[in-house]
Image 1 (cartoon, rainbow, N blue to C red):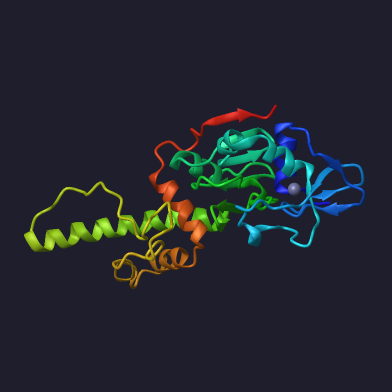
Image 2: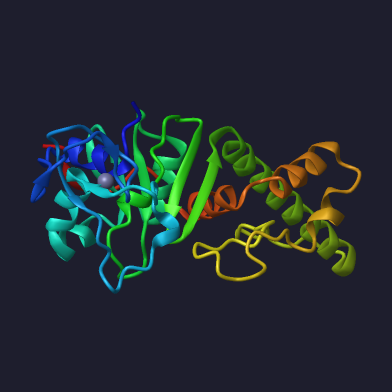
Length: 260
Ligand SMILES: [Zn+2]
């Protein structure tokens, strides 16, 4: 039986299920889709007037909310806000927002099952909306209302592709300056981003290739492959690449709270 995101969260944090009543039938939670059995804590599903996340319900035809979702909801806003940008895995809950933290977890995903989610909005809990990750090779990150898919192999290829294209662009700039002025210029040190890098993914051009890429890559099979790698990256992979290229010391992720 597959574990739901909320059930996974409370099991890793060792939080007991709760609820004003117990189930008189086996069923699946309206919110997280997790199973509950006869006798398990649960409550009839009654969305509050302010609830609008109907499209996220994992089992919209269900009748009850499970004791795991109730336990999380009962902990209130402070608890929820402590866990809005997190990796939830066997070792505990880890920060997942700074460039360094995101870079670390995308390159070194935790042992499955695990959750990866980021909420930048002051809304309710996001954990119940996060798909349970069952693979280290394909990570799904819940980012506000988006679901980002990151294939680890393609992400690693994209890092190398971006670096190779940047190097080629810098070499081209040096060559062109030499032609123009007839003298050598110092090697530019800034990375030349071959793709529009953005953490928030709110610009229509996020993830677009820089206009110089095709010209630089023309005639060079390795660079043409690199451009193709970036062009065939998912939105999530470009999002991940952004953090990795901006990371100063990947791996210095902040441990919020260890698993009990
Ligand atoms: Zn639930």
